[in-house]
Amino acid sequence: MSPLLVPEQARRTTLSLLPLGAFETEIDGSWDYVTPTLVEMLGGLPTSSLLGREWLTRVHPDDLPRVVAEYRQAREFRRPWRHDFRMIGADERVRYIGVDANPLPRDPGARGVRYVGLVRDRSGIVRALELAHESQALFEQMQAVAHEGVAIVRGEVILVGNQAAARILGAGSVEELVGIPALSRVHPADHARFEGFGRGTEETFATTRVLRPDGSEETVVVLGRSVVYAGAPARLVTFVPITDAVVQAAVSARNELRLHALEGLLLSPYHRIGLEGMDAGIIEYANPAFCELVGRAEEELVGMSILEITHPDDRALTERNLRAFAESEGQGPSRMVKRFLRPDGSEVVAELRSTIYRDPVTGRAVSMTMFRDLAEPTCCREMTAESHQERSSKQAERKAQTALQGGNP
Image (cartoon, rainbow, N blue to C red; front, side, top):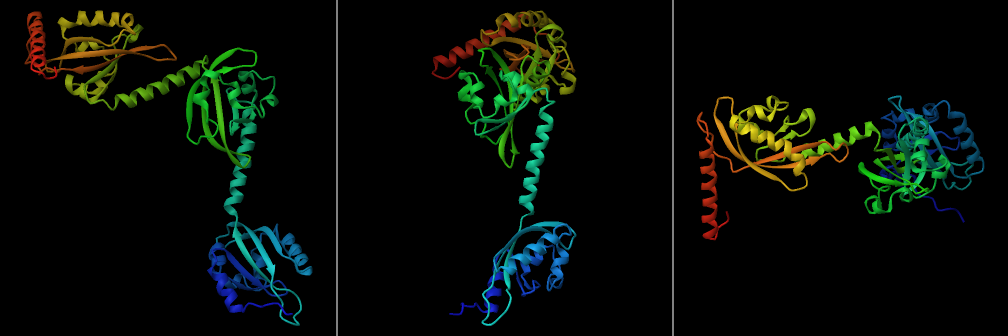
């Protein structure tokens, strides 16, 4: 029984609808039909440059002998021709393509074999594999000389690590790290925070305690980011003992950035000043509301002593409070009422609510101060102790009356 033949026009119409490139050959291997998709895939080559045996001129010279030999062998045994090779497009850019061709049923009495084939552009896949191999090679080159511990983690399992990682994690050699669960070296108390660490996609930054097989512990800073390793997604994890001075500086800088992000959201007047050593009383940050309150620009305030903008009668109290801040740490926010001087000589009265922030790495302390119950600026007058006390008494009296009336003070 003769094989069922699909009419040529119907077959080629179907091929032209496919999102893949397609072609048909004569019995001698020359192409007698190509789809517009294939032409587009190769950078808009003229169709004539692919018909006949011209398509061979677009095969990369290094691949041509292999392509011809494998096609001839497939045709001789009338079997499918599947091959990956490179073709050069109209823009002279190399494309990596994959060909999947099958023999066409023969007409009765016909000799030889014709093929119909589909063509896939595999350039993206090939490049991804190249990048994977490049990233793996780069890691292997860098890990040996890296000062910090470096490891590749996939699915919570360590795939590879460097000498520094083996030393920090208490392994006798790099080979001992391969295949062990990453959490086996994390202190049990920190396991909950690190579950899923090896499967995440976002950059992560944390501190944790390393628990070595001999029972010793060390606190480390851990940074994790997504990479492609050996052709698959993984996590590149770096970690350094927190005793390293460089790490201390980096963690402190990161704490500072987080602090600035919060400070930038404050709408009420706010400033931060140093508390210890040469930084005691020096303004480190002032938000726009505080700048407006005291009538000075931020760049003018930062680096200035808080005493320079404090009313002379309140400076002694301010100095005492600065000295007492460290003693009051952990006892809750402190409050005081004081006066600030503006450049034009006017003054403003404000209630201050201050608390201590101490960097968890360096131990450095600063005072963070928010302003409440602002009074209107005075017109170049001095506020005596009596008027100051009188104002406080009136405020207390108003609050008491409001409370008696059922309102909020």
